[in-house]
Length: 248
Image (tube, rainbow, N blue to C red; front, side, top):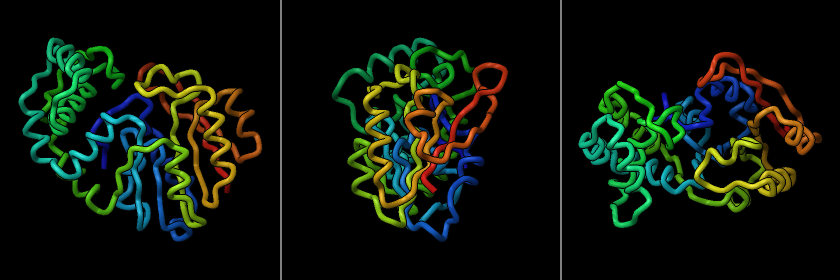
């Protein structure tokens, strides 16, 4: 199943490789996506574990996922009121800076903003001629997937990991890549990269972490297993190197 939205840093092109790198499914009973993003890895399988957790620090994204889970029909109707135009993209970008909208109204605006932006960056209009309606046709299917027991959280990553850590837990972490933090709306500092490593090194469960191939990251995780992977660059021609890091 595809994600309901595209988002910068999404794992659409690496989701199969990532899932194949997970340990055997019978060895864990809880699966936690610490930096859920667009959820490409979560939605790749019908179910990863008995307990599944989706988390993100971006409140707009979390609100969208919750509205899809509980109000997919109402959200689809709200989205149907929008047109694919530069003016609408600029208007909703400004509106999302304001308070006073319902959760469904906010979710619809955020959905449209991401769909109309270039490369799903949420900042520039993408001149995509694809009608918005075709982007909402599978929201009902996404709702069914989320209603299979996916817990949606909005926590700091360290707090989340401490809450759900067990010997039978598998954490998938896809944090903002080092030196690309400015592409995201939520602050993630150099100290947060270090804090994430310090948190993961002491967990009872297992983790798989995806990162850009970067000297700082290689040094930070030098005590763990590091695997190089390559994917196509979805914004430019050529290949892009990434790292998969794990403690198993």
